[in-house]
Image 1 (cartoon, each protein chain N blue to C red):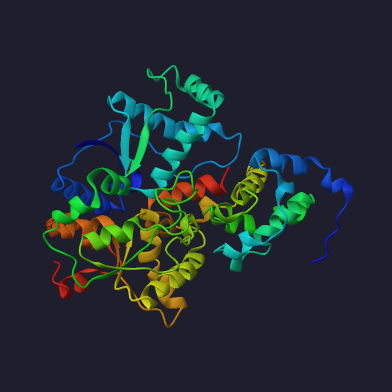
Image 2: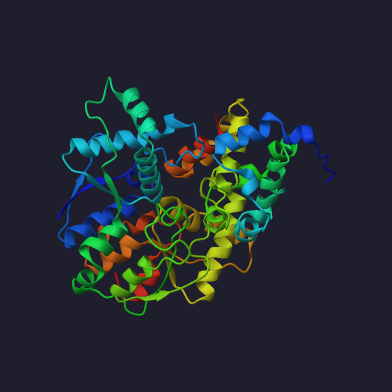
Length: 135
Length: 293
């Protein structure tokens, strides 16, 4: 992957928005990688959790908002529990999802689910999926 | 002992086995369970965005229902309800401005102003801290002899640390309970690994991967059954074994039971209260083999 970094991107409102929505200080992260080491979902992610934080520090908006990682993360909080710097990575993932959802860019297309896909799962699965993946 | 009870949606649907077995077990332990009147959805997931106050209204409204029942303590069974109600409560307790906004939003309809003084208890806390495991052991009429049980906690009972009911990395309450019931608790490293939760709706193949790793690890450590405490974990680990078998040829099926079904068996509850018909992997052959039903 070729990535361009620039001062303009770092100072962009995107970084400030991620910090505000997540309530996290992104620069606290020193890239130890413990979040990615313990994450049960990394095998399905295109950008690892520690990279998500690094990309957010650098304001790499396009890379983050097009990644599948933010939709694979199920907020299990293992990363938060293990971060030695107290960065809540799950909250940063939520902020990135919210930036898209608040523009009505839903991840889950409820209308495309079949009756059995909707009917077989318990109500908590359906509701939490809609809460996390739709606007 | 009398306790107010918040069931949540899934306890009245897919997890009827969780509710019925709990009610029978608590009756045997002399606990009177009073279902909260007019309860509503807990929200299922706690909103992690700093400004998303509207999604904390539903859990706080339930806590007002608790106050209206003239108590300040409520018990939940579902791990998702427990986590969402407790976190929303901690959120407003720590932030007077948010609490005031939520109260003002609900004011025309709600007569009680919420002050953050309700205690949310999980059934496991009630069993461990109030009834106490040694007293439960004394009431066992059918010990779960020779049954090797791996206990699976998932995420929401233990994380985040401030909300969790036991150690964040190595919880033991379920194992201690199973040992008190006469079973042989089996430890395994995947007991707090996420089952992929609501990904089950649109990415069942992700859940199949997790189910494979979690259950295979439990079996490698000698488990004959896996006990769970969350209806979404229960669905993923039980029902998604259908997809797991198709994806992994070496996978062996294993029955999944709620810890309350095992508790109910040990306390002598009738088989009807266990609702063993609601399982994808039928636990009855194993339970019959161990002379437990």
